[in-house]
Image 1 (cartoon, rainbow, N blue to C red):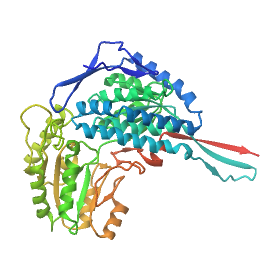
Image 2 (image 1 turned 30 degrees about the horizontal axis):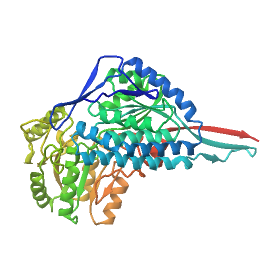
Image 3 (image 1 turned 180 degrees about the horizontal axis):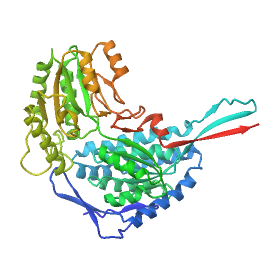
Image 4 (image 1 turned 90 degrees about the vertical axis):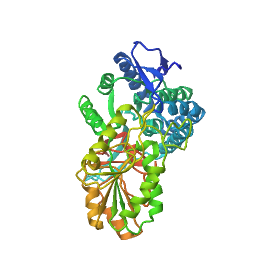
Length: 474
């Protein structure tokens, strides 16, 4: 079993305590490895090292920071196979998908490196003739980055790249479901010879995470996770009045109009719903189908869902892989059972598979109603609730009648309806005739309980800055 160590203050450190975190392969349920649980003392050392490194990093010309990010991107490519192997073993992804996640993260890193010459302030007109107002963009300081299990390497890059280019230092706390790949990622950080303490990666339990997030050095906490986790982070932010940036739950509505190509819609829905076993915050969860095509689309989906196999992707990469853990498997099945009791019809799936691993079949539910739990709460698994609607106004009202507002999808060839949806959908993203893919030059931000702030693009980078107004009397 490989010896994993936490990385902080520029070096890999032998664990100071005996406590370790077991990491299981979700496709088999077997322990894949274990990682050290950082102590509170180690977290404090990391925070102080990050604060010291950031003071020097922030005054470097931005182009030098950009060059350092390009060097880290090159180091990640050199370590892609090792990171991918760890990620595949701890996530249930195929080796090809896990390695591709690293490569896609590298492209995101290189994109953010290009902001080096594009971070802008403003010159603002003063009310006085002998005065000039300048608004500067400045780094926040040390950022705590809390990473989810579903795309742990891509999300790690998504947070640290804009933080670093804008002059911050980072402390990464990976998910305890997928920590090994982050510690291998740290080997690329070391190989890139970034300043000691600038990037720190530590695995830890929840109580130690509290110590990290409330340390006086922390000026910002960025999280991708559940609403409950976001509420906890908001409590942490009180300690330092730290800035939160939260990408939380989602319940993506998909509206299918009568003029949509149903074969294309079916293929896209099945692909989106079964990617990483539906553990994607923008995955389709509510399908609103016009009553004139409801039965036809349902029949196509039923056939396609039933035909989609699942299993260990290390043996067959074409299959849908497992859920993250046994708790997720049981939670999702319980939600499906409650939906059945409330009157939903299980068209496909809906059972707990026998054997090892945390699998759940692609599950299609018809006869759903807006007030059902399966429609109101995030499933975060391969389960799709289907509802019929009579007209476009009703579809928009149903899509907007929700606590979440992350992504939304519309299938139509009617540009007027597409523009209406663009004007009034209550979500941070609308995808027309395609499914969410989070282009990294866009802005991935949620409304309502789906979050605060956002990731990607210019606006995602600016999340990691604060402003200073300078007034020149002349």
